[in-house]
Length: 108
Length: 116
Image (tube, rainbow over all chains, first blue to last red; front, side, top):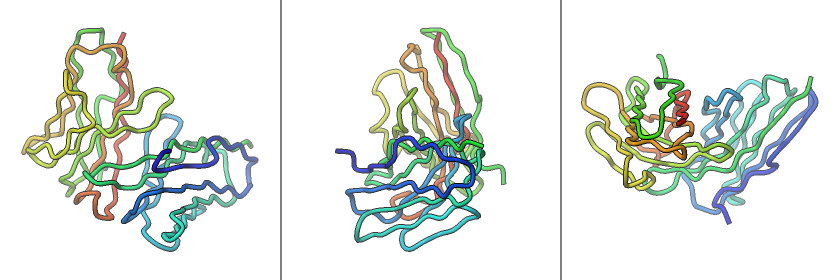
């Protein structure tokens, strides 16, 4: 079993839909990261959060430490949101456990 | 603030040649991490460095791979005698302090190595 599980693995949505990507983890953490990998391959750190909720534009990330679960929401999705979204949690030794990623395709 | 700069973005090598990938961390960041992403796979940790020191190289193959982060200049990931299996995207990330604390990790755009 992976330390970080993401669902769904693949997601196709119509433009304008509300999207939720889930991440569950089995280790104790200080913070959780959401990353976005563009179709061209570049990686952007979207959020780092240790409690509650953070919002940046149309992106919202929430975390429930007790339940060891985080969600990434995208409101009013747009084709340019098409990317792979990766959940990552720090582990000892300055490494990360990475989720396998959720591939999102938003259709116009 | 230019972010994490990696070069080259694309590198093609023949089997047996050497590949050198460079990473300049964000200004003010002294911690550098290298990750490898094989085709259709997730990110895998390779090595963690601070200036002039390798802190953790547990994810790096023991042979042919080496990394450094000199006092002056970028961090370099060096792959000697490349093989086809080394074809991957290599990502560098940097942080101000170690990620064992809740610190922001900034990724570079990656270097894509293709071994013919």
